[in-house]
Amino acid sequence: MKMMLHRAAKLSNEIRTKQKWILILDDLWNAFELHEVGILDLVKGCKLIMTTRSERVCHQMHSQRKIKVKLLSVKEAWTLFMEKLGHDITLSLEMEQIAVDIARECAGLPLGVITMAGSLRGVDGIYMNGGIRTLNLT
Image (tube, rainbow, N blue to C red):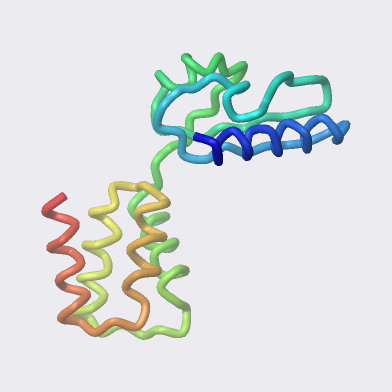
């Protein structure tokens, strides 16, 4: 608790000294009072951007504007997957099918695609095949 108060005070002091600022709060799962983390006033020229999967959190945080991000298409997911896996990688047909399955299992969620591709960079086919089994279990 003491550490949290220290961080809130530090953020509050930093915000007060700036005339214009943008603060990004990423991947919020629960709503909270902004003053609890050191954000006392939102003044002209200052922006607070929040990302969340929950429209409820947007509502509880009194968001002024909501921008709904669409899921990636299968083609977009595959392109992103290969981009993050590495352009210098040539996949065998079997490995490519496993990679396509993994990209599809991420259900169009960019973070899932990026995470899986990054974690599979440089692994062999047997282990990669285990990656798709892990996704199916969750």
